[in-house]
Length: 386
Image (cartoon, rainbow, N blue to C red; front, side):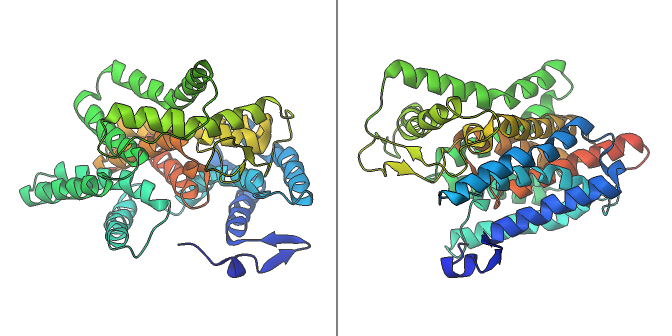
């Protein structure tokens, strides 16, 4: 839930305000730095050592961009450094893994099954709302399919009811929720029925790169169409094609185009930390400070090409590693859980910023590394029954 402005910035480090989000990001980054210095074996065999070192080096150019943004009084001047620190959540998950038993995927079951259902209830009665709803939709699909896979008929019916409840929730919601729900469901069905086929593996690998491919396609189509000077929204009762076409070319493209213009004009090392998007559409502010609604473009814009490419390297590594989890892990729940994270990572990076923000990003990438770490432990201990 949102925090009042007067309570958000109450601590200062020198002249720098330390918000709740920045404090949390600092904790994550500091914990990863500490582990790298005193216990680097935590990451061996799990993540590239080169990637870890480049992540540390990226704080230098991103920190400079943050400092300039702060001096210029730009909104969201800390976004670049926050997003670099949030990418460290993927490393932080391997640290948490040390406290989890090898066979203990039940720690995820007993935590996220009731939590997922509880959040749905709170959102449905309008008590709670945040970007966590996107993660909740994906995990709701995993929970529903997990119970449907059980031999007990009552659990099967319960799982079917969970899927129906979550579908009813997204019925009049955004296309992003539709995408997350059906992509997660598709992955689970695909792996359960066709997981032994080599083509399934390559289809999943290809799907990981659909977000940058589709982003480039939309930018190209928008360029061919010419300047878009007004927003045209399709009604909720319109067919899926009309809604998707309107959403992408008339709702997202103006922001993506402006972000792309900033990216290609930026310095290789120093990003446009806090620089608003310039929008020339009636009804919208000329300077848009809420982001470009595309994680790939926004990461490159605010962090610079060097650090931005590094962050994307981390995230696409996480998504590819999840494929091994959903294909080969013996735990039914872990496979479905990994499929849900893969779906929200792919769909979210294409249509939103939430996979890299503090509210949702921490959960997605920390849980992704937890799942992958459990998979690696399973390989090292094949006799352990999960």
